[in-house]
Length: 363
Ligand SMILES: C=C(O[C@@H]1C=C(C(=O)O)C=C[C@H]1O)C(=O)O
Image 1 (spheres, rainbow, N blue to C red):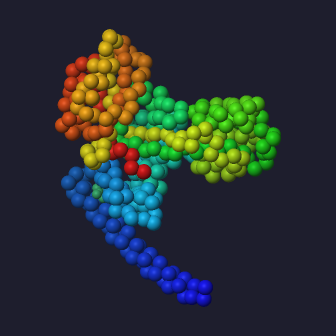
Image 2 (cartoon, rainbow, N blue to C red; image 1 turned 90 degrees about the vertical axis):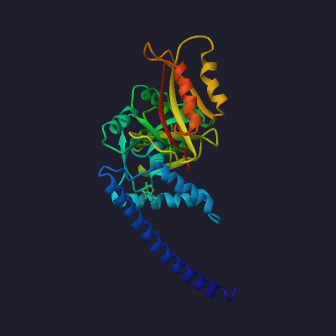
Image 3 (cartoon, rainbow, N blue to C red; image 1 turned 135 degrees about the vertical axis):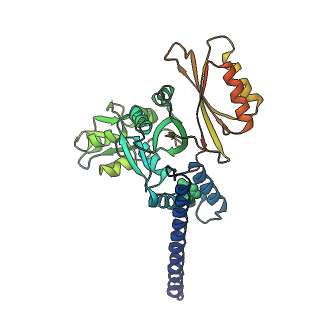
């Protein structure tokens, strides 16, 4: 078309103008966030700048305002980064995660806190809890359940002996790839490394495509990726972050058996989070070992119209904890209906502990 160059030029001018406006507006927003920090500091010299409930509200509002053509999640992700950068102007938030570098847990941490957060890899779930308890970091991120493989028992067990609070949740779509170092040929693969959870999530694909390769479980997907870097007859199952970190080649992409394969991670911290309007609560309840226990436990939830999202039973580890249930439900512990229900449950339980009320995952 003959007028294309003129239109292109005009469009580029408009884009330059808009970019100028966006830069000015983001800077103004950053100054406002800095002023908020000063107000908070004036009220309390140990004030915490990061407010999970406020961030959830900001992101939900952005999604509601969005009219396209970008989709609402994409727009919220951009704002997630803007907020993360604004917060880091005061003090970058420190987050411990189940490492090593390149794990899905690190990806979840950055999805939740944005790229300006300082993320620190820990060797084990207990260490993430310990770092938070010791105040060495502001928050921790640990996996809690996968849509294909179920609950991460170790995370639940760690809560039983800890005073840590759940401050948030983040759900990540998990895509696994079969990765090799650049000198490895597909027909030479005799061994595959990965985390046991990932083997579970890719079982059918592996049975169909690599039935004879030895499956070697290791402590994380990132560890698997690191190992194959120097092994010519091996492959690893891991995600994009690990593939990039270790410069591996993809032999096959998205090999998870279920296309909706996703993992839920918990954000753990030391403080309670106020209500944001769309909250969730996690509790752990110990009940006596007697007939009708589960019915008695669940009846108050039903009567108060509270929406359960998960219930998990774990074997007790002490004499007192006969039956231990981990229950997630919609609502915040400060809502009157929820508070009344919790009071009733605690009357029947050997012990009831609220692990936290927190914003439902936005992104
Ligand atoms: C600006 C605030 O502090 C932080 C920064 C936010 C932001 O950039 O929008 C939101 C919540 C806090 O993490 C606030 O509390 O409003």
